[in-house]
Image (tube, rainbow, N blue to C red; front, side, top):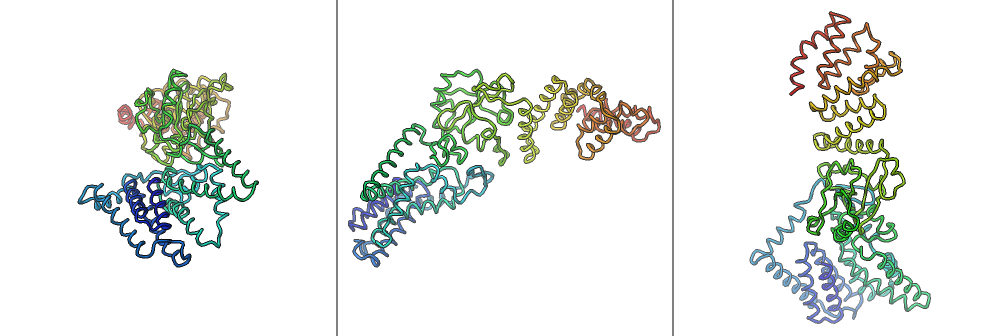
Length: 549
């Protein structure tokens, strides 16, 4: 599209000067080929139509500047329309080619995911960003080019109508593609405005030539900009697709500003293959954009899963693509939820410009090792819980996320118990059952209560304080905190059935009928006529059968 747009505009400019039929026909062919290149070739049609209008106007305002007369301009328009129609009709299957072209145009966004979100400098939007392509141009164009473009604009002779006619052939295409970008919600890459670059570079060439004629200082400035541009090119090589200029902090920080094809399009898989051959990690997993399966590049890696994304496993080397780090397709089922590795962790290595390497450890001895990302054990759990709760807040029926969260709680319960914190271990065992109940988890919780309950009950807290804590926890629906407080209350509640009844109700709601029955029977031992206990024990056999199922 960039090639044929440039062809159409260049030959139209030549036609404006020469009025030769050859230039007109080549420009018309450029329009037709642009239409066949991409549906956004319609922007090329709009550009050429606008430039024809400029030429017609310039014949009146700048006599002698435009060679073709009104009849020649009309002939060009007719030729462009005819050649474009014939070429599209044949290319799309004569005699229905034009109809098929129109049908295809109507389906450009047919497969667009309505839940997809655009990304721009830390912000996300389902409707895209109006200024997306302007910012992409600002961050992904070398600064010397941008500076020379500004110089070009500043040095145009505002009083020379003829100069403005020439500059229209450079500035109209730039403005047209950026104007089209304002309405393009698919904010996925600067490639959508790639046709801007030839015209941008033409303007910098004009600026360089003009400045070179303005004295020694201007020539030195042009040479300095050229050297800067050359040095930047060599420094970026060979990672050109993921290039970002100094305004974005360079390629290393580009993924903080843009994602998708601005950075990652599978271009670093051959480098990843070489990296794996050198480093030979014991266990490695991949989550990155795959234009082809990784095996096609000779890479044999397991794919990372949701568990890896929200709760990375220690000792595994993760190869994470830039786009996944900003907007992972692993979480496509719950758009708007992300895992924040870029914010939380510094990668241990980098493959090319688009793949970052992570390896996690929670061992304190690894705190200062540069080859791993050290995460304190407590933070390792808390981060996973935070991410998973965010997912479940948006998608409560997302069972994979719920199962992983239950596993995090179970794992943390074991860690707390090994660390001597019986109350925290017991609370996490309760949360695991609440998150995803199962017979196996209930059995583990019952064993934990039998094992850790006495240690919690013997904690140094007064019965009155424990009762207050239990009441507050029950009001906010925190069964884990309420159970811990009640275990301390019932230790000294020899003549009060109420705390035993509250504890029995919690056990019952967690699917622990044996423990619930023991507490209800304690209620009857204190008060043989205690109605709630009598009713509960009458229902218990049926509820026990349901819990078992």
